[in-house]
Length: 108
Image 1 (cartoon, one colour):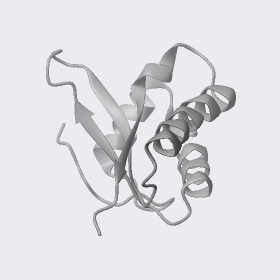
Image 2 (tube, one colour):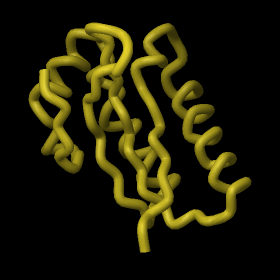
Image 3 (cartoon, one colour):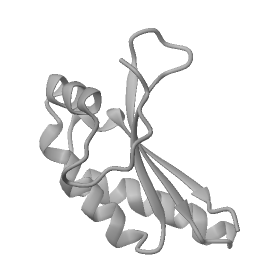
Image 4 (cartoon, helix red, strand yellow):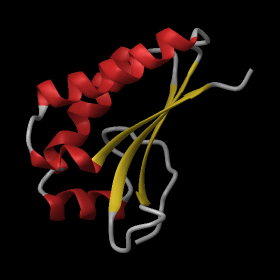
């Protein structure tokens, strides 16, 4: 599997990300998590990528890579925590470790 960096929308999920999500039984979570992320970060650039763990062979993550305009450190940490809390409320269970919030400050 490659690590695609295509922007994600309801109609443009990369094939290998869909294949991975389907294999792990989390395909149904993709669209709701993207919608939740867009609501939480309406002005952010969001990409959803499939990325391998750099240290563990055959371990992959679905990363919601978010470029936000948040500049305050505490607000940044709070937003990151809220994303994970909301994700867990939406989809509790053992598969939650597959999803990562990659929150970054947008470059000016």
